[in-house]
Length: 125
Image 1 (cartoon, helix red, strand yellow):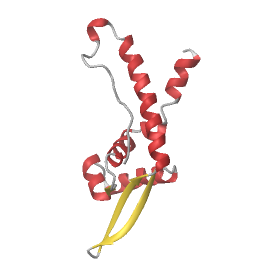
Image 2 (tube, helix red, strand yellow):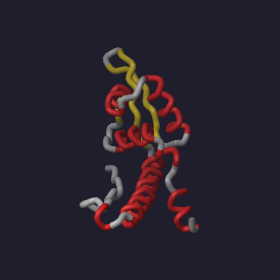
Image 3 (cartoon, helix red, strand yellow):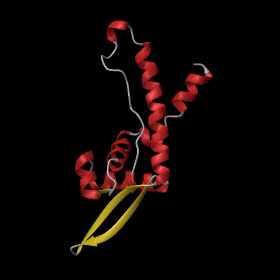
Image 4 (tube, one colour):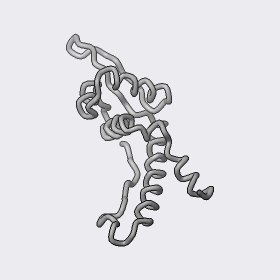
């Protein structure tokens, strides 16, 4: 494998490449108000313990920030994407798009998908 090709794969940040964390960050980046723990649990199909563990990893990496407060006398945890997290996730998506485009172009003509790979950049208000 040549150095350029190896660099493309190395740019796939493992923090985001884990399927559950990819689902969590994808969900959170789709909301300007963040996602509650319950929303993430349901959307991502994770148990309390599994979601807690992934959130801890993402928080320690500075990708998300966790807000804990009381709503109608009940505790509520809300997860927000940090500015650093948004930047890093966009970089990850760009690297993933590059790798996917290379894989798609390497397929034989009859095996290529009818729609080209297009991920784009995530913008936040």
